[in-house]
Length: 126
Image 1 (tube, rainbow, N blue to C red):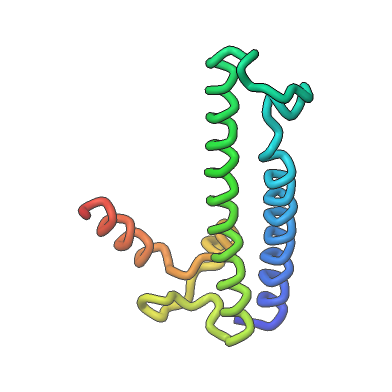
Image 2 (image 1 turned 45 degrees about the horizontal axis):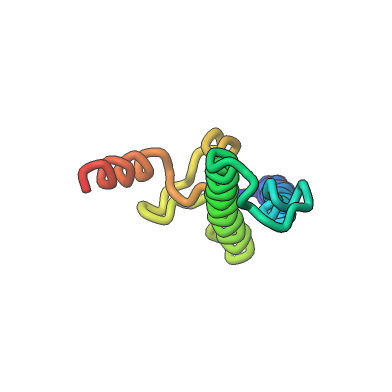
C-alpha cells in the first residue's frame, strides 16, 4: 500500500476515533442523569415505578452504546497499530490485500471479505 493511502486511512481512523471518544464522553456525562437528578428530588419514592423502569432502561441502553463504542475504539487502535507496523491493508487470516472498497467502508477491517464471510459462517454454526 502506498504511503499516501496509508496517511489517508490513518487520518480517517483518527477522525473516527476522536468522534467516538467525544460520544463516549457525552454518554459518561449523561449517564448519571435520572428523574431524581433532573428534578433535584432526594427520594425516588414519589415517582411511579414506570418512570424508574424507564430510567433503568435508559441507563442500560447508554451502557450498551458505550460498550459498543469502546470496542470500536479498540478496533480502530488496532488498525492504527497495523499502519505503524506495516501490516495494514493485509488480511490477518490469508495475508492477501484487503480491497480498497472494503477499507473505504470499514477502515479498521482486519480481514478481507472472503475471510470475513467464513468467520461469520463459523459464528453462525456455533
